[in-house]
View 1 (cartoon, helix red, strand yellow):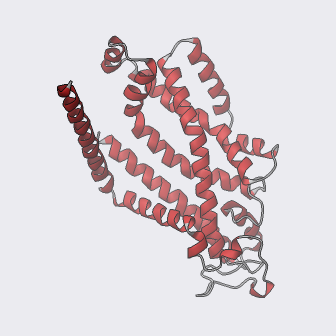
View 2 (cartoon, rainbow, N blue to C red; view 1 turned 180 degrees about the vertical axis):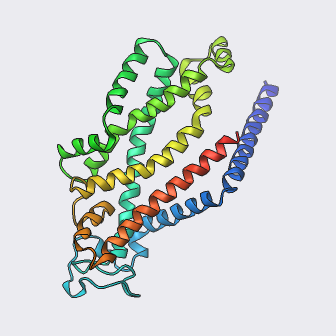
View 3 (cartoon, rainbow, N blue to C red; view 1 turned 45 degrees about the horizontal axis):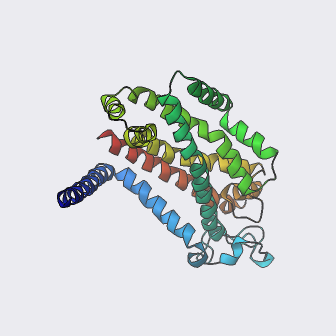
Length: 299
């Protein structure tokens, strides 16, 4: 009995060492790309600014319902880095708070679509050719057949316009793409020798799916997650731009672009702040996604 306990501890330590070594190799491959490091740096800066927006912004009260017509339409200066808008609100402050709502949308949407999409894709791919596969794939194909932006706008239009319903609209049209990705990978991996070996020793199906198959798909899944984050920001901004997302005075980036664009080109700085914010967020996620893809390609 004592021998078994020692042996188990040794195996456990060995597994932890292997995981640490694997993470080190992964980071080494990721860090070889300077652009990927740049993307990660941009994202971390934006995330920190969004998290501590109440403390790092010069005028946090400007993020809500605030009016000061004496400060209206001020151009960029040391006092107002991105100028002020038509109500005298600091555009820089509102852009930083806009990052918070954009990242919240990305987190909520991906949290809602990735788990069910991956699980359904695993199940459909593992039971390929059965009625389970038919039901899951046919339902997902119905959603995929519709243009994503059109479907999201259609769903958002029948709901009350706010940021929560915008998240739900995007989530309802995004999950099938993860089903499709995982389904194709599972269909090819289900015939590998290690899967047959797991079946031969009587391993339960759920363990085969999540301990044998899923770890071999993490690279493509994580790459898609980071790239999709940029698309979620674009579609979320588009929904807000047409008035179906977050409503004023919420400092949502898409809503701000929609509000301020009518004052172009005379007061260009009002649109410049949120537009650059959207661009930087999308750029950071795309660069991170490229780095993750390259890192897992070396496995």
